[in-house]
Each structure stands twice: as C-alpha cells, then as structure tokens.
Length: 573
Image 1: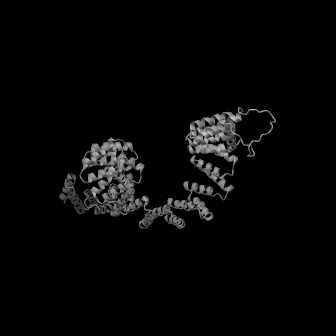
Image 2: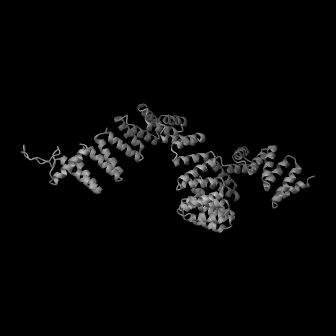
Image 3: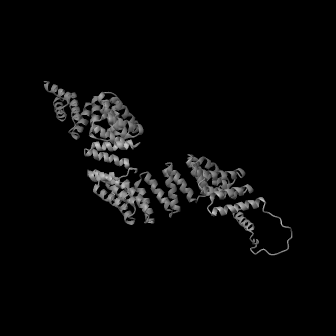
C-alpha cells in the first residue's frame, strides 16, 4: 500500500475509533440498508493495528512529539513488516532528527528484504556519500544504476563518489557513458569539464567548456568556470576576455568584477584593478571585501597614505574588522609612524587569528624605539600562555640577539624549530645563531636541512657556499650553491661569496671581476675589501692589494690580523 493510501486508511481508522460516521467510498453518507451478513470486527487484524499506530505517529509528529512518534512508527512496523513506505518515512524522520546512523539502518533493513530496491540503494548511497564513505556509496549507486541506467543524476552521483574515492579513470568512464546515452546532458558535460580541469587536462576541459558555450550561450556558470581555468594557468588575456564577455551579459554581477580585478592584479595592471574595485564600491558601498582589496593594492604600490585612508574608512564603517586594523598598522609602520602603528596593532584582541602577527609587529616597533625590555616581556608573556605562532619565536629570538643574549636566543630558536620543524625563517635564524655562537658545524647542518626543504632559499645557499669557501672545503659544491644563490638573488654580498669561491678554486680573474663589482656596491664592507686585497695579492698586483687592505682597515680598525698583513706588505721592497 502506498504512503498516501496508508494515510487515508489511517484517518478512516481514527474516525472509527472515535465513533464517528464514516463516509462511503463514493463520498456520500452511509445509507440505511438491510445487512447481508453479520458484523465481523476487523479491529484486531494486523493491517488495522498498523494503521492505528501509523495514524497515531502522524498526529504525534504534527504535535512535535518526535520520540513518541518514532516509537509509534516502530509499533506500526511490527504489524506491517513488509511496508517499505513506513520504513522510508521513518528514515526521513531520523535524518530530520540528525540521527543518520538510525536512518541508514532503517534503509538497510529494506535492502535485506529487497536487495534490488532502487529507492533504497539510492537513499543509502546518498547517505554513505554524505557520511564521507564513498566506497560504500559507490556500491549502492551501482546497484541503483543497474535498475535505472538512464537516470542522469544517479550516474553523476556515482562519478563524484568515484572521484572522492580516488578512482578518477572510472569516473571518466561513467561520465563518458552518460554523454554517450545523453549527448545533450548539460550537467554531464559540465561535470566532465570540471574533472578534466581538476586533473590538469586543461585542453580537454577547455574543449568541453567551449562546446557548452556554443550549445548553451546563456549558461553563465560556464563562462565563470572557463575564466577560472585560464586564470589557473595564468593566461591572463584569455581569462580577462571570458570574464568581460560574461560581464556584458550580467553587468550587475559584482562577483565578476572581483574576478576581473584579480586578473588585472595578476597582469600587474593595478590602475585598472583599482577602477574595477572602485566601481564595485560605488555600486555597493557595503562591499567591505572590495574596500579591503583597494587598501591592499595601495600597500602593494607603497602608497602608504592612500592605504591609511582606505583602512581608516573601513574601520569607521565596520570597527570589528581585525584585518583592516592590522593592515592599517602596517601602513603606518612602513612610514615609521610608530605611535599610530602601535595603536592599531594593540587594538587587535587576544582571541583574534591575527593576534600573534600583531604581537610580532608590536615587538618590532618596540625594538626600533629602543624599548627592548618591553618587547621581550610582551613576547615572553605570550609564549607562557601556550604554543604560539612561529613569528613569536622568531622575533623573541631576534630581540635576545639584539641584547647579546645568545644562549636565550638559541633556546627560543630551538623551541620554535621543534614545534615548527619545516618553518624556513626559524630554521635560517637558528643557523645564524649557531654561527654567531661559533658552533659552525651545527650551523652548516641546519642550513643543509633548510636547503633540502627549500632549494631556492638564496640566503642559506649563500651561507653554505661561503662557509665552505672559508674552510677551503667542498669547493665544487660551494660553487654550485653560490651560482644558484646569485641566480635567485643577485645581491652584492652573494657576489662576494661567489668571488671568494672562485678565488679558492684558483679562478683569479673571475674572482677579481666579481668582487670588484661587489666592492662598488658595498663601499663600507671591510670583508669585501679584504677579499679584494687577497685577490690582487695573488695576482701580484701589490699596489692594488695595498689600497684594498688599507680601505678594509679603515672600515675595521680593530682587525689585528689585517693590520699585521698590511704592515708586512708595506715593509716588502
């Protein structure tokens, strides 16, 4: 019996139990007529008992007595165990009561009796999928699909479950089967385009999106996804073309303008990005995200005063925006306006996700203003409260270093790297502290582990190259490190390292060329001029060596070894 028929009979039973007149099946009142047979009570038949408990369950449910309603459903099922509709209804109630496990067990009971039930397999497949059990969902979706092979949404659900289970190839098979059966299926073609995109098959994804646009030019979602596809590949011009095309169709869609602004940022066309974002704010003054992006663009362009204006306005409109307060502090800090920067950072609450970042800036501002003791106390208090963000360890170690407390700096650095072993800045700082502590071998070991994590960290590559050059060891590897470092970051101190490696390798003319250039860019670096003197000395350029050593001693008058070297050079005939 269907659930609607079941409900109708249940209400008839309620009327009987209440002693009411029951209308006949034709809709008229019961007529007086001679009885053809004696009355036989049907009240104790299983069907009548099931109807009674079902009717009672529906009444209880309407009154909000959910637990009692569930109990009544279960009673009804004891009298009509084969009724699937009862079990499905109760399963839906369990779902509404946030009791998915009971709902799943109810549907599983149906499958025990009817293993091929389309509705049961589909319901259970969806339940397992929602419960993040894709493997079990796949089993039931396949069972359901065997009963209804042309059901579009069912095959789509199966494909998604296969993707979640890591069976990408099988998902493609199902989607291609769907399109073979229903070539006009928009959801199917959209799903296969997304799967191509997610698996990096961008050309095939583009082909599917283009076919959809050709067939369904009014389908705005396709333009959005194709634009995102181009954006992911950093194909900015084509992404911009697609988003602009979509914008002509939906000029009031501000989300599209956000996408276009992001594309302009990717193209470093900041003025046009600002134009788009300002248009958004004009159309919707309450779009705080657009205002925030405008401020960030000003920060990117080092337009500090404009950034201050935007973030101040944003805070006047929405005072609880910690990101705006944080960026306002940064804009003031970059201008070395310490007091308003400090006020902004101090305004970030301790339960904010940005609190540790703000503390790092507060510590930096204190450090710049000679308030080391306050900065140290502030960061120590934060560390005492429990595990802190890595930047707290970094800045506290920096503060100890500036105070000359090497042991404390190293202790904090070791605690930080123990908690965040993959944090590049903490590892690099630890290596520097070990070097300052004259624990050279340990410093080299830390830097080598850092390079393993990030083989494009120019400063650690430079550190290793210079350490090997100073020790006159591992020179081939030192050259590789120095050349990689200079390619990543062509700075004068790295040029000095490369020149010194050349010197150790006996490549004197290359060494001279590189270090001479470094000396022009670092005119106050005593070490660079000392290196330059050594190279000239090796090349027998006595006068040039004397000049370079003299310059180095002027910059570092306390260097006893350098003074002795210069004196011996002067005494030579």
